[in-house]
Length: 252
Image (cartoon, rainbow, N blue to C red; front, side, top):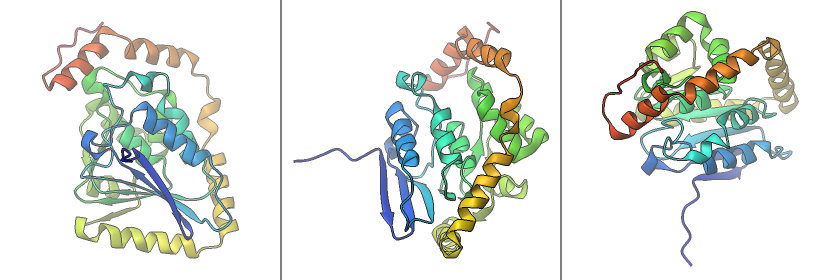
């Protein structure tokens, strides 16, 4: 009996937990089912033979962000899934062959090491459609990019080429498209050869050191985020993006 392909595939091969975003026809935009599948995969503890996880994506786009046509993402938010990836006990490598935008950008940056093609772009275009990222998502940008580049990424909303993102220090490796897999494999092999107890301890130390911003009071900002994302401008922006027309923002 024919069965539809899984939208997120996972397979453990030797020391590597391989994860594939498999919704190329939708530019791997994250719907509720994909978010839940990724959260489940990274909630499953690694086996004794595992040393790292690798996230790849089918097709020319790594991830175009949240699927704006799928309302289930409102009840299955992205933050929980990203937290599971960030706190996964072993290193997580993202192999980014194409654009990583909005939620796709956050997905890549929540991994420990990003190996990107020079054909890829990274960015957060939410200001262009009347939305705003949550405290949790901006926290990650500030940790990785610092305040100056975070302002550029968020306030302008224009994507940056992978080579520039690498030069700015947001991602660790960049390669020409035909060398992407070889570069990624060299990183994977190096991680797999390292001491597993060291990797786990180092990952735990990094995660713990970077949680300090969670302790800052931000309930008022959470309320602001909800208000903006439920505004008339947000509805107009998403409708305009889906219709591929300019948005007519009114500031309300």
